[in-house]
Image 1 (cartoon, rainbow, N blue to C red):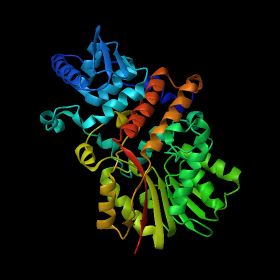
Image 2 (image 1 turned 45 degrees about the vertical axis):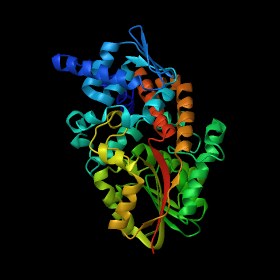
Image 3 (image 1 turned 90 degrees about the vertical axis):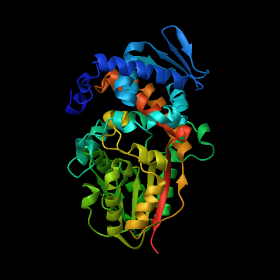
Image 4 (image 1 turned 180 degrees about the horizontal axis):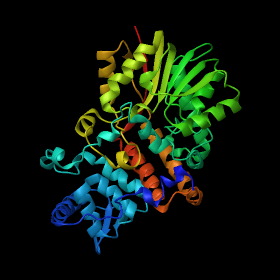
Length: 413
C-alpha cells in the first residue's frame, strides 16, 4: 500500500468509532433530539426512527441507531450529523434529495432565539488549518493529493474538477454531455479574460492542465500555479502529450509568491481555498501582477453575504473531512474588496448554480458506479460513504440555492 493510500485507510478516521458519552453528552443529546424533531416536523421529508415516523412526507431518512445519532449531533452539531452518516447511524436512499430539503431551510432549522447562542456552541476552525503560507500546502495535499487515479474514475476526460456549463436545461444533461460542458466553461472564462495569440496568462490553481492546454491552443503562454504535487505531475504529462510544453509552465508555488506581469489572469474555483483572512491578499496579488489593460476571470463558489458573515468562524464537516481551511466568499464581499483595495472593477456576475448541481449528480453517479475500483485503490468503505456524502451534500446546496457558483470578470479603467 502506498503512502497516499494509507492516508485514507481505516486508520485515517481517528475518533470516529467513539460515540460521545457522559452526562453532558446525554443532556445535549436530549436537546438535539427535540430540536431535530421540531425542525423535521415542518419539512417535506420522512424520517423513521424507533418505529416512529415524522415529517410532512418526502425523501426518506432512516435512523438506525437513534441514541448514537442524537449523541453525535448534540455534541458536534452538523459535524456530528455528517459523522453519524459515515458510521451508518442513519441512511437515506435519495441522500441528495433529503439533504436538499434541509439545505433549502438551513437558516430556519434552529429557532432564531437559539441562533444567537451559535457562537457559544459551534467549534472554531483549528489554527493549523488557517490558509497561511505555512499551512496551505498541507491543506491542499489533504484533498488533491489523494490519488490521480481516484479522480479519473469519476471526472470526465478533461479532468475538470469544477462546475460544467451545459447547453440548454442543466437537469436534462447526461454523462455524455459533461466533457463538452466542461470545455464550454473553460472557453467562456478564456473569452472573458481576452486570451488569444501572444497573451501572457497566469492561472492560479492548475487543476490537471485542461485550461493550460486550451489557452495554449489559442496561442497564449501560460504560467500555472498549484500546491499539489500529484496535480502537477499529471498536468505536466497531459500538457506534454498535447504538445504544449513550450507554452505552459506548471509551478509548485503559492499565489502570494507569484512574480512577473500578465495580460490575463484566470482562476477556477481556487478562491474557496484562500480563506477569508486572505481574500484581500489574493486580490491585491492579482492587481499587482496584472498588466495595464489586462483582464481577470475567475470562477468562484459563493454563498449569501449574511450567511458568510454568520459562519466564517465555524468549523464544518467539509473542513474536517474534505477541504481543510476552505470557506466560501459572497459576491458582495468580492466586489467590496476589489473596489476598496485594488484597481479592479467587477462586471455583473454570471450565475451557474444549477449547472453545478447537475455536474455533481453526474460525478456522484460515476463515483458510485466505480466503487469497487475505488476500493481496489486502497480506499475503505468509510471513504466511500464520505465521498458520496460530500458530493450529494454539495449538490443539495446548489440545487436548493443555498450556495451558488459564478464566473466573475474584472477590468481596469
